[in-house]
Length: 70
Picture (cartoon, rainbow, N blue to C red):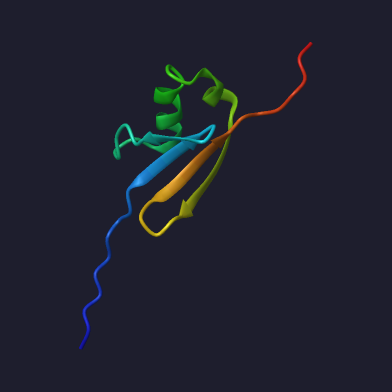
């Protein structure tokens, strides 16, 4: 009889084509957003897509919010 084992995939974050390492697996995705806004201010208003299973990780992608100014 075969034994199944479940393993959690690590998270990875992408913004503007750049892979950003997970600052802490203990943080929620929204808490990660708060941490990353100090380095990437545009993430504060970015749209969050995912998670997407890539086979090796769960990918969360921050997409810039497009809007008009003024």
